[in-house]
Length: 522
Image (cartoon, rainbow, N blue to C red; front, side):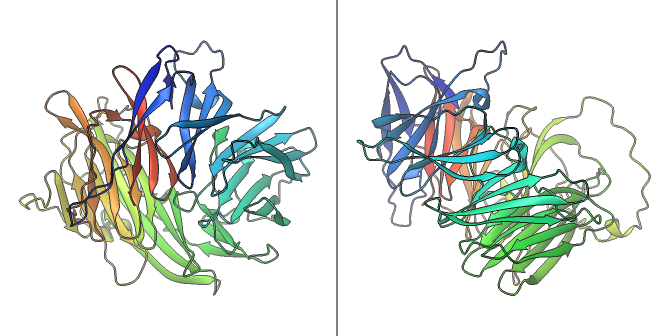
């Protein structure tokens, strides 16, 4: 999310479609692009329609703030680009009064701008559709409404993996005893499949899509709500009638729904949830991350839920220690818990600067408590030879003994299927991301076979170049590189936008002008 200098006549941008070299030694062609000077303001790639890209631009709001906020800017235009990012045409964005929230997404037909607008008594849902036909403009239509004035934080939009269905979920908390959930399911052309209202005392909202102009939840992200291709959907949220969590499963027509309680370990407090959907097997996988008493002890519970059978068919629990002989983290860190589709879950811990203040006293803990007895304390083999420079894998969930550089990444893998095993590893790559940014300095993209870790690597004293480490199914580093051709820029992975399962937009700051890279994994 960066500004284009409108004074410059031509601003060069680099488009890297980076692909691992095959065994034949072939690499995908590197594409370059130029942007005309009339594009100004803030911008980012929304997504693709076949081989065409859609770019959104935003106009700054007048503010006295010294910090630029992309989300606080007003939506301005949509620009259609060809496969080499040359401008084909522009469309002005639709603006409605009393706009509550907006979502943007692309499909095989074009770009969609979804607008939620409310009055004192109702909330209206509109869809503005933009198509690659140069002679056609946008078409705005009202698709449905809610019988109450919703809050922006109470609306969730989710899309299925095959892009055939869209689900809008609205939470109405007008009753202190019951939460009413409005579920609106649509086809890809925004034809209504059903509009259901479900009231239950056990309902709790699983997450918040907090951006005023954002994107729907996708099958490849980690929101605790997922929509299957057949129209069934599941969400995982805290139970309002117990200290546990619950899986809420809705059938394809919305008339049947089920609750399944997920018990939590009594020694641990909840930290994060991740989910993935397997449309071929008609199953959902759920991973719960929790911690023990502000210590370095963690617990991960993994469940496999069959939509066909309506029950949990696999569950496992992992108790482990993230740091050797340390009750508290020795360094500040960012933490992220993600799903590896069809395989399991990955916990990543990025370490930062050591604490500069006096740590609070650690409460007395009985070392014979079950949480300690169940945790893995095997230390990593310091004499073990790294398979790849700066990367050391280990079998099992082994804690790291010391933290040296800011930006080291510790990984823990937990399988969600039978006949698979856990592993852990350390990626020693010094990073210098903003300490007050909650996101990792690393960008992680995963499919069912590989895990791609993208990051900036310091070459010498000052040169920073983007690079990647690709891991196999058991945490072993592969020989397939992602080739960053002539791109000696510091990529801003914390502001990346993953718009498909195998492509991601990453901005960077240049010395003369800002720009971005697009990385394609397939």
